[in-house]
Length: 51
Image (cartoon, rainbow, N blue to C red; front, side, top):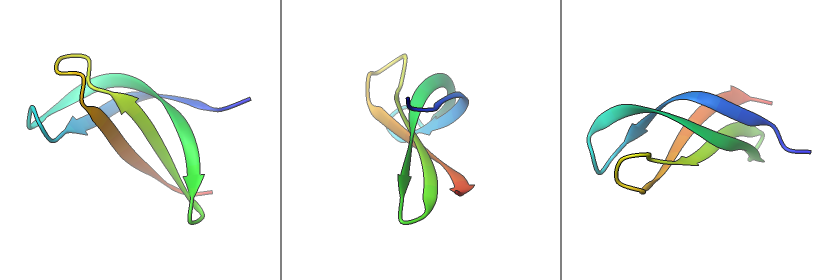
């Protein structure tokens, strides 16, 4: 069962912060949320901190 993060992500294409939902993945002992921008559809990431 994967963890879900809901909050602000920064979209590089729109150059604005957007509210989105994404799955939490652990890479190199860091938690990262990966989602999709609701406006332009680009992938957005947010580093959450160490696991």
